[in-house]
Image (cartoon, rainbow, N blue to C red; front, side, top):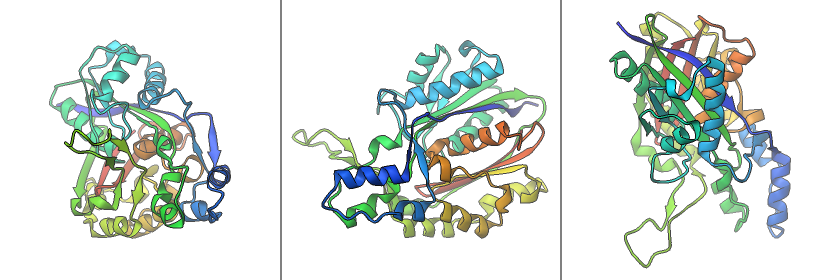
Length: 337
């Protein structure tokens, strides 16, 4: 019987960073008539700095950087891949799939497609990759993402009301990440479960302006991220906690059995509220939000890469990947590293 194992992980965090103080200075300079409430971004999110990609780079570049590092670490060539799944929120183009662009930059010739579900994109891509591996369709699958959300930060504001509406856009960070799943005799992906509360999809959105069939309308452009924090919390509270606990119970595990628990992090206060809600011990969590910002769909693989690099996670250790995303969706994947 075939199983899927997580063979490797890599993250690419651009060298250029912007502290929250520097971001506030830039906002103040662009909006001299607006009395910016200093400290609000950090106090509300815990974010001290975020990574900024070079101006010429696209999401596919960030994904390719991480993918090259992972392939080099594994001693593999792009031709060794059977499938590439691009699982980022930000994309180079609406068409074609960004996976094609990543594959071209890597020099790969395998099938490709995109898997997108907001910040749970990578988690869902693991679900898809595992299914394709255990059924014998593919033997080596690269999951990658490139996040360039800082490109949508609004720098000119109409006033305090707009600032509060788009404040979450100032917590995001650019990053690339890659995971490699392979066929194995022993299971590495041990279990998973997913859930959705789709009625709350309006709580966090990045809309297309002027998306219409009217030929006289302006060309569509993206608006910045807007978040209804109360709506998101309602989505979390309404989610059946079995999505977090059932995969553990089925394996006879508790949170204490894990070397690390990687949890999506949109803000530090929300992270600790969620962990308390579902019983995840704080010392098990890999915290990235403060020093790296909200890494969007790259968050979970970046946390795992950090934990592996630090020696916190070693081969044979158990790791839980816990996803929370706008939509609203949630999921848990249990792996043995």
